[in-house]
Image 1: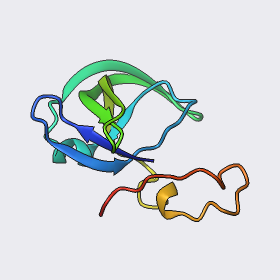
Image 2 (image 1 turned 90 degrees about the vertical axis):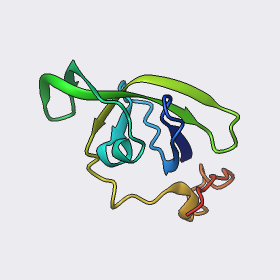
Image 3 (image 1 turned 60 degrees about the horizontal axis):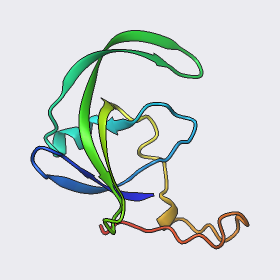
Length: 115
């Protein structure tokens, strides 16, 4: 989905595609976006568990504001994990994808960010 991410200290912002994963218990932001937004990075101990592995270590974290493009929704996210997102180049955003063949998505209108 298209969303806006803001640096709460500088106000710098960028419209991005966000992946909403109801099974995740951690918020995540790419290193590239963190650099572009000039986010303040801090390191915190964190245990990461995926389907295939688990590791504990000091992880880069930051704080962001996540907003809908129309400004109707806004949330401060205080412990977003910063790192490399593995599928960033191969994903297609719903707003750019023809979902009409998927019955459960047919009537949903996905907002798209401006390029």
